[in-house]
Length: 191
Ligand SMILES: [Ca+2]
Ligand SMILES: [Ca+2]
Ligand SMILES: [Ca+2]
Image (cartoon, rainbow, N blue to C red; front, side, top):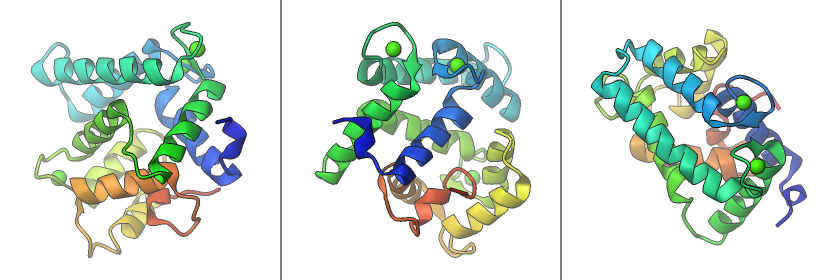
């Protein structure tokens, strides 16, 4: 399935994740170097010491995620995932989710990893402070983080558990509905 079969809205959401969260060094491709930067960022954020248990676990998980991403997306096997390869992979993912299939395993791993990165206290709920701290570290303004969290949590009425997070995650990547709450999973969406 060609990337142009995603709507512009889906395409822009998917590219926003490429630019903001994966291509950490902003050179236009995703490589292992970007994951190294992500590990550093996440460990700094949580004050996990270098080569400590949490640091090594984060590295091991991100290595699995990178291997999965390469397997699905790196079509020409040059150890780089371009925007074109990324969009093509997502077009295929969206198509399989629409058919009722689940997301590929590496993405489920990435989703769980991001949940754990957000849930600093480890109580299996992401609260507003935890959420805003993580996304502010990716350069998203605090007011946008707070507003996005209010949307995701229905103004604090819905607990953002792992199950809710998974639903919002799938909405972000798959939904073509501009009103879907999940569109704001990574800060208020302005598309
Ligand atoms: Ca890069
Ligand atoms: Ca490639
Ligand atoms: Ca928590």
